[in-house]
Amino acid sequence: MKIIYIPILNDNYVWIMINHKNFCIIVDPGGNDALILNSIKKLNIHPVAILVTHFHSDHVMGIKKLIKMYPKLFVYGPKEAKKFGVNKICKNNTFIKILNYKFQVIFTPGHTEGHVSYYKNPYLFCGDTLFSGGCGKIADGMLLKAYNSLNKLKRLPNETLIYCTHEYTLQNLKFSKSIFKNNAILSKLYKKTYNMRLENKCSLPSTLKIEKKINPFLNLNTLEVKNYTKIHKDLMFGSNILYKLRKMKEEYK
Image (cartoon, rainbow, N blue to C red; front, top):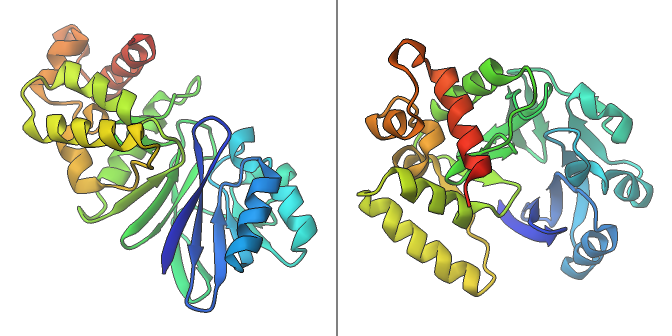
């Protein structure tokens, strides 16, 4: 399987999986319809399905145009995205088979109530749940669910390739460097990512092995993160640390 990306909007990526016969699966087509359709035509690939992680506009607004052009498309996604064109509702921990590829549906609420991720070893399409060096914003009332979702993804194999849908890596790593001041792996990755972004290259995918070493949101119980968040010892639970850390990330310049 070959995986390519189409950059859309300000910092989104549409991921496209292509098999040896040029049939393809599109992940989170969030707008820029003409760009996506022109890319499909230029590459001479044939869409058979769409995978949707959640209902936010920058992940779904290209669906209806694609369905119009390709009426037989299967559109998999959570119930929350049904009104945007999802015609195959995904349920947690079930499997869907497309083009002889078997994807596990992993329920990962937090960024939205119905957010799902798709896993086919070693590929993980996790939408806005987990980013390289960071995690997505957490919806109101979703803190504990977000915490559980991150832990769920953390348990996947180390070789898992993380295909999230935003180019936030450099800023996330900058924030991580303010926490892990003596992390040589992080420093090296930051320099590499900085140079890639100077050339407008995509910084993804990351690997879960790397993220476990540099991503503060997967290291909530480390001394560095606890010291950084300054949470009182009586309140030092994983979800509380996540809340404080995510808030500090949003305020970080």
